[in-house]
View: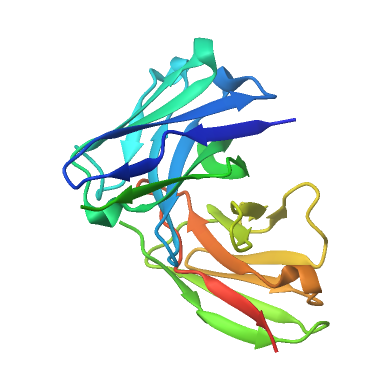
Length: 124
Length: 107
């Protein structure tokens, strides 16, 4: 069974940093692109970042709202995905989900396997 | 960036009703579109990818159509477990963007 379990959320002051983790199991982690998606309280979904596989050089993509402040990374030996969040703003308050990407041909979409989410609250 | 506009933002319907949600892209995206369902307090669940392909295990009352800029998600006969929020998302290029969501409520 595919499982994704996020951790690392919590309360942080504006300007602070936080590192989220996502532990994957039940599938060959190294074979998949991985995404972070967030949802502010009572709001819609926002894609945050993507990391490709080793064969793609672990290249990354980011939403404009987080580019330069957030860094997505992965450790295939630990079946783990990370999101390093720096210079946090109150607008970054959200539940953060990790999700497994699914690729078909040259296109990759956010698939049906998501974690339960971890809440990040940025407040003084 | 490609903007995704969903309508309506909310709707009230009864069990057994046929419901259609639309999603419009600000530029052509072919069929690079997924639909998600989200229930309160839960992670989203993918229903349809490539605009019209049903994910494994998703009931056949759900269907998707469209290409280019105009897409729709139809629930042929609304069931009690279908009351939820629905989101479209394109994957034509980066950044991937979601529509604003449609909340389907009980009439």
